Image (cartoon, rainbow, N blue to C red; front, top):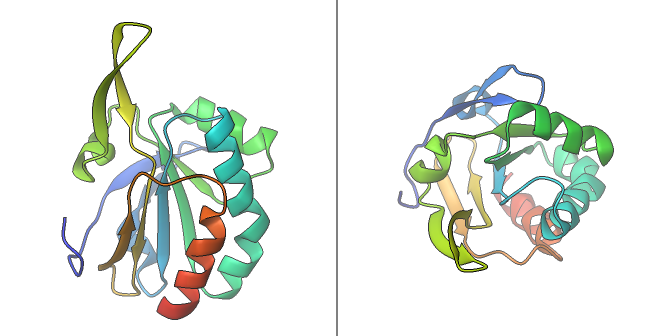
Length: 152
């Protein structure tokens, strides 16, 4: 995937509804990928986006969170932390693979599949404007708000 490339995907949201990236054309879109719902780093990141959501929305931006969690887990995460934006479920890692975010590693000596915490920003035409890989959760939402102010 290259900067300037038009990208699309479709996943179910936390309510089981199908959501396509292309349905948000006309607005800048921030898509953040996180490894697992309701884990410490992911909660920090999700809550920072929650706290800045009104400002992102005021800039006309759409915010989507994506993880490998099932729809039910995404719903529980959204409800537990009052997340006002859309969370998308990618349990089969289709979109995570599309964005080249799947990493093989080990935990306690056992092989595990990990998702690289990353964020992608799309312009109003649906073209990739910017990508951020190996994101640190703290402060990232504020960086994305500043970027969206320049894109919108």
